Length: 68
Image 1: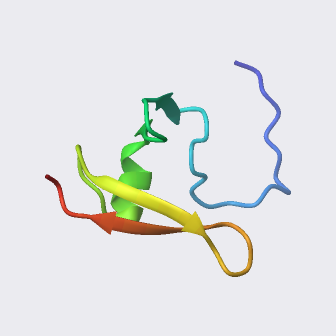
Image 2: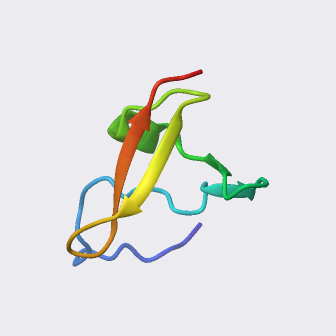
């Protein structure tokens, strides 16, 4: 491991983007596997139902629904 250390890079926690898995079910539903840090930020637990709607300024808004 002789990687160069980039001292100009921004420090801080980076969200891992390679741990997101999406499986599509029927009727427009998806099973999304998130890293635990993301789940804590969004405030969801295993089996939560979340709805994504288009945001006002682009992006998405997340609506949480109770676990059935």
